[in-house]
Image (tube, rainbow, N blue to C red; front, top):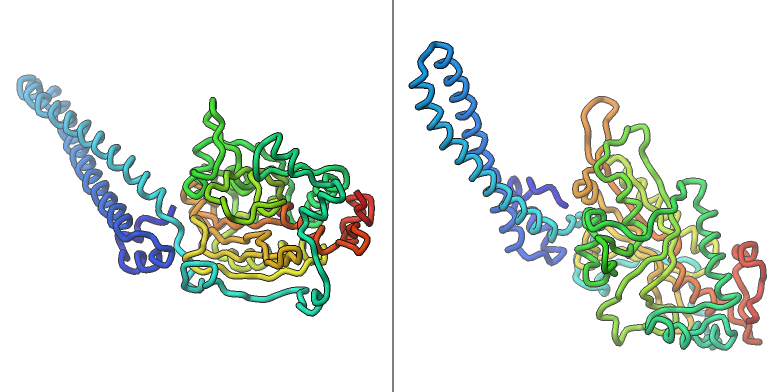
Length: 425
């Protein structure tokens, strides 16, 4: 969550920044007023406790002096004070519960450098890598689901038979390509990131504190008989590992990577591009995530973005880097760079990775601090990005690699992992 002191100390500036994320002003006013109400009740509780302590000391003194009647009379008054404290404590808990609920709906502040805007049309194109329109002139590219189905490496009908729409079933070389992509990404990034094999289901507290239940509540899958959610992204368990901890400054930055199967309902996706592997309920991904000192956050973000780009460069796929506008940012993010791969079979740029700075938003929710070498503690900053989200990358490899004879040539970097150069079926 954001630092709620901002709503008290600098309300108008904070409201103006959050308006760029289309946050209703009424929500911020409600949070500010609840915070002020909590402070007032807390002061009343503190005053009453001081009164209670002073009265208890007076009772003890009167008893020692043998003035029992005066002591008993004072005790009766203290009983009223104790009742007032209990009443105020109930009131404070009610206010805090409401404030927690309201604060959980307030997203992270957008970075001031993020462009204004409310949709992807307002996003800022930073650069394009390996793309030349002339390379595609005079060539016909089939969409990946047609190529893969003809080769027998993708079976959309049987996937639907098993699980319904927006699931995939890969066969033979298609399944090996998926596995090869995961191994390729894990090997590529093992020089900087510690590999983690986390649980794929987490408690409500964990997914809430990472800011993803608010973002994905309508999209997430909850287990029926347990307080567990299937993870919508590997970021959730990686960021949840250190909740409630104080880390040594010498341990930072902590860089993690994890191969996870992720789950999203994709509610509202009807009518969108759901054919093939463009949009799935269940997908495989290698996630990169970091915890660092605030002063290192910008440089770590740049390095993380470069690492995610390295995955695509090694595969020889044309891509572009887009900085999201304020209104298009995710709930927890302060700044986001999307990596989009060109898909010649559908003639579109498809997002394959989001690289995000979350500042101290998740750390405040999850109580993740570090102990400074010079003394005291501070909140860490967190960052995350997809080292490789397999579905659309798999699709782009099929579309870019299609040969005149109907086969698919794989990028050289994948050959050691898949074991073949050409997918023939």
